[in-house]
Amino acid sequence: MTDASVPSQGTPHEVLAGLGDLTRRVRAAQRGTWFPLLLLGALTLGGILVSRFTFEVLTVPCPAGDAATGGGCTLYRQGSPVYWPIGLALAYAATAFFYIRRTRNRGVGTPVRPYVLTGIALVGLVTATAFWSFRHGLVRPGDPVDLLGLRLDPTSGATQFLERLAGNATAVGLPLLVLSWVERSRALLLLTVVYLAIELVPLTTGWAGISATSPWSALPRFGVPGLLLLLGALGFRLAELRDRRDVS
Amino acid sequence: MTTEPEQHPVNGLDDVVHQRVRLGILTVAHQARRVEFGFLRTALGLTAGNLSQHLAVLEKAGLIQVEKGYEGKRARTWLSLTPAGGRALQDEVTQLKRLIQQIEQGSSAPES
Image (tube, rainbow over all chains, first blue to last red; front, side, top):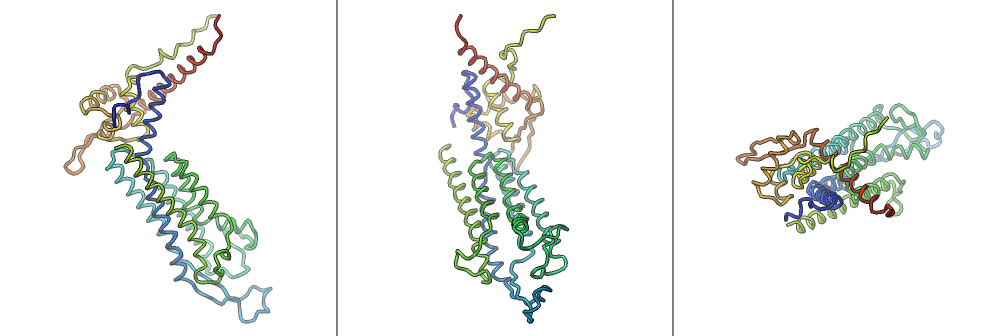
């Protein structure tokens, strides 16, 4: 870098513009957005395999009004109750460690603490909500959804939205919003909005040609957001390398 | 009853802060919260001696806090903004914005 990095001794306009330029350079040195996106993307894609290998077909007693079926109702279950809480907690811990190392190596502090704390707090909340729902065992078809004491109609659109909200949209999406704010990154904000839209919009698996009862039914549900996060990680990493090349 | 004439923004500028290198140091420290000597030297394009002199002025004025330590065998100096330093930087930016406003109002006012 040259001495031009120091705010110029010109008009107040020039001095303020110089300070703005300096602030942008510091922000660029602080950012490490690609790393949490890489971890979250890998974790999300890992969810496909976890869902595949935990896929089960169960026969459970049918709801009272559905007694005609006689032999019971078929229930498809997949997913591990510990994969997401442990995976996300480890991802946030690894992100904190990455940013601490980066601070030491680059000599500039990073404002990542709010992101990590928000992430861990929301993972705790989402996990508590999930354990509350399943504390009496598997929910049978037709039973009301128990969301922290609220007994909701499972067929209602609002309940389905709340169920989607009480998942990765909260545990991954909201912390990413915090990261885009602390890193003052419009690109990350845009990526997060797209991610939240994918997580919150009701998507069926039909468009991917995979039946909802297939062991691979989680592929589109995790594949699309997972690939989005990994592509975001790649884009931010390339942008960071380009910025470093321009500075040196 | 008389009213005090409003002070010109130039009089509100603090000489310690207004110096361009020191303003740069405060800006970087404000954004980074904690910044290492080497990063600051590179970011501002200064020699170590020159930067040390400016840091001494800011530390003496109570605007920054300097911590010296070791990471392994490597000596490292970290600095952070004090609350007074944060306020001083904020005041400086406010005065600069007022100056710009006055200049713009002056240039747009009709000549008598």
